[in-house]
Image (cartoon, rainbow, N blue to C red; front, side, top):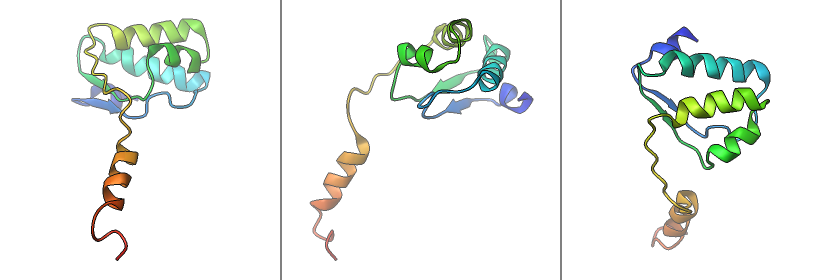
Length: 99
């Protein structure tokens, strides 16, 4: 966990796509608390804070983790664009798709 706490930029992709247990939540909190106000953390997720709270094992852990992420955060909402579907549709319309 120390390595994650001190990396220059921590990127977490597909954040809380599925729920985590108490031990994982404690580890996540420890890393985020250690990085708080020191180093940047980038979260990529198809969901938002309301879903994250629901996926965390208890309300106290959820509030602590989500507050650390939301504090001084910049949010970029890409909308409902599905890049996999878009790429698939573009590939199917290409001239070489059936070759």
